[in-house]
Length: 611
Image 1 (cartoon, rainbow, N blue to C red):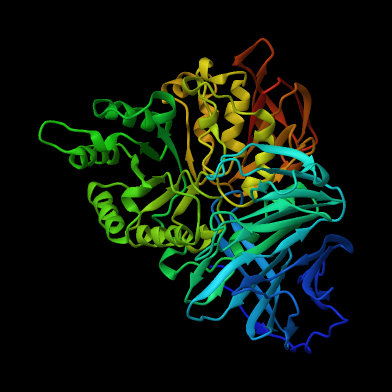
Image 2: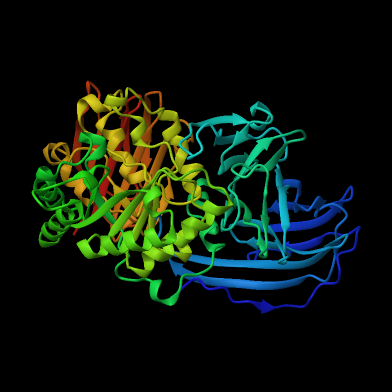
């Protein structure tokens, strides 16, 4: 069933005394949040397995020159239980969610407002709600996170407003004070991993953080620095701390998605919302040429991919008296006859206005397209945050899937609108292209699964096999990208003819766009290497994504459980990055696979049960 929230009222707690905290625990008892008054400010602390994870952190907004968290007087809190499960498209098949939520009415001077604190088995989230009032001004967001001590952190600075920023590793003390950081940001606090981000962004501005004094990561409204005026009720996006005991628990969290409303009934497991792989010409050969379309369809069919994306430039097509839309209909018809479905690129300017957007989507449906890739959105201020949801809704009404590019990070909207199949918001393979003379930092790639991808799917556009496009990477590193980086719309960036000619094409053809299970294996170290085991049905893939330095890697196969498996190992060739060290062996769960991974190298292992 869909992951709906079931609210079961428990015994209401007494009004929060000034000297005693309100305690909210997770259903499994591991996590605890304490809402406290401290130095005249409303704050919350978080503990996991008895260890302090977040020190006293501020809550509340500033509205009409009133800071809601200062001098707040609480009313009677109510605790509710939340549970359910849902299909997800990504690193696992189902989300199983359990949480407890405290809803606390508050008064600050003449302002009445509500604080919600939700403690799930996977983490803690807080948000503020304000009633509607004509002419209300939202001036600042004072939510913060305080980490205990100079802990290791992984994240990125806001150098590019569309989140295509370089991931780094540092410590809390080495962060540049006052410089805006993107979310998500991940920290290692003792024996726990903690990822900070936001969920359910709508009718509100994109949120960032910056290092301040006393280990504080202070919130800021990045795209609406002067705030806004609003007549409607205010629902602050959830401020989220995902908390896990290990990296497997971290990457499997669906807390960001779970904090969003469930989909409407017709979208629950809708058959037209289908994960799949896609070819795409822009990265490998530039703008699409109409005369080449039959060949691209043939290549897509030969690879067994479900989709073909026609990128920027198709709107300039002409063929005799046929305009671009008529040309596109002929392409979609031919693709459909060959078992391939077509996605279309569009600039956000063409679908910004509601009326124009609906008319454009109607044309997409009329020519036979199944999805749209929308590109070049401005920074996400309050207006644009709502545009994303309106656009996903308009697309869903027409049974169109969506891929947002040049975009903000995901905040779980794909739960409400599961036709959102991917979004960029990541420094991906477009940053490693010979014609642009750019090279992607390899340490960055080994951090992404534990930062940006904790927020949701990402359109990295992986895997180039053309030797001139490797630029130091190996085939193994390039193929591992398609395994490690999650995108239910898995748009491959390389040229199909290079894939079809590659000795590892049989493995590439079997890599799915969505997985049933994901585990992070021993030997993984963010910034150095990633070992990710992912299952589809009874077949496992291991993606080894190497970092800046060569290393000897041992893949422990205990995750297989039992039985014998046929293993196809595509490892690095020590003498040539554009070659494989290919092995075909039989293995059991007690075995290990040894790999010599080049600098900027990697490997992919396919494991299928042996009869």
